[in-house]
Image 1 (cartoon, rainbow, N blue to C red):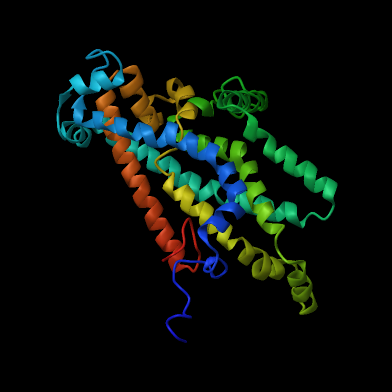
Image 2 (tube, rainbow, N blue to C red; image 1 turned 90 degrees about the vertical axis):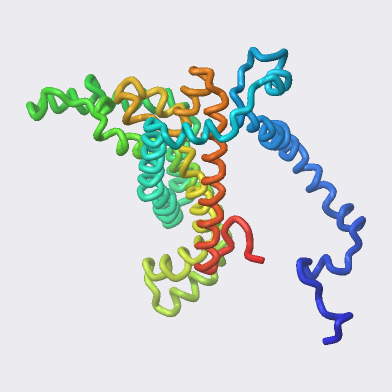
Length: 326
């Protein structure tokens, strides 16, 4: 092959000979559809990144008129906020709790949507499948206040389970909602009940793209239901599983704040404090914006490292992950 006819790297074969203006005209509608999302990211994600400079200051909102003026008049402290973070026992407690809750959710919650999607996909009747999917997806629209209220009515001191145990004479005092030792399992159960339905939709969409001829060929070869699931269904889900797993690992330091803030008084701050709530209490309630910004920077850097590491592991397993290997 001569150098002039060799394909160029970095371009798709179909776009190598298409001029840029033609590709722009061809994909113009798609580009216009992405502009609102890009604008939202710019306004609410990328432009506010510049405000992280206050992590290197002793920022005071009263040092000037407006944020920019206050930032310009605030004293510079260098890495003092980061040094304070390393010496803060409460910060390390919040980081430890965050990793604990995230690890339990990764271990117990992540496989649940996969298993439920496989179960629903095996139901042949379309009405039963649609009804089951709707019931499982409904809790995703509930607020955390409603979710925790439901769990309180079930597992609280005056809940259904406690009343049944007292009526049967098995336990006089039963209240899982105020048990610090059980809190990590309670949080995981709440996440599983609320968000499992969202993951089911993603995996069912992936299953709908599987060629049915593969199942027929496997059945002709004598493969039963479990072998067809193992050799046809699960390999079809591997790219989606790898992608969502990378995203889940990258979000390990972000377990949400509302769920923990609501239950903070029931189990105590030592058990329920995570990085998100710790930033909230220091930055918003305490007014220590510089220290909260420093914690946010460290959290973002380590989240990026987790994504890169998980994506590299996905590449070694032969999957694309979030981005393809160059």
